[in-house]
Image (cartoon, rainbow, N blue to C red):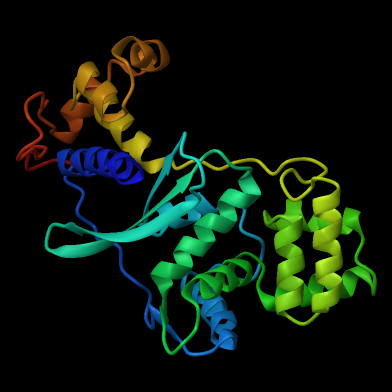
Length: 291
């Protein structure tokens, strides 16, 4: 079921890209996929990726937006139990392209960790006998909260980390309190025994499922929908085709997006020809003076 849903979404995504003539492939930064032979390499890989993407060490305001801006196709599916996310490569034209999908039925902080985990699978090349899932988990924590940032935060908080401070870190970095405890344990800031005590307390109070305090907001991919709506607004595709691509009922699409109608002047200026036929071979026609 997951494979079928992902396949359906991806096919619609690739159709609108073909309609708009978009063919810019995602390019891995130099040195990636990063070779990992020991867990310490993961910390270096996370910082190296941030440096390659010129992110610095600050918290990531919107992880999905960041990945889409870097050219990754990101999707979200709903209604699937016991599924956090997946990453894979797909044939697009003459090259293989990475794709990342995550579930929408989790709090935002858990979604972000799943997304960063799947990013780890794409960006790392695990060698030797390391457990790939543990490596991806370590990368997720290191990418969301790099080691220098963790040390800086703890220096400002003092020797004792309270529940309220964990909640503050959760909201600042978009990483759950429990993920923070794992992160501190991985970095040797807290002992295995101390971390186990915290996890036990969370289980006793039911916080392992729903953490106390304000939930972290979920994030949503925007590129696919934006491409469809841009094509619709410029009258490159019809209402029925736009609703089909967004997997919406015709009337639902009209009620939500009817205000976008009337982009003919934009379409004329850009030299697009309206396309209402089969997706096969769709390519927007452009005049010599287009764009």
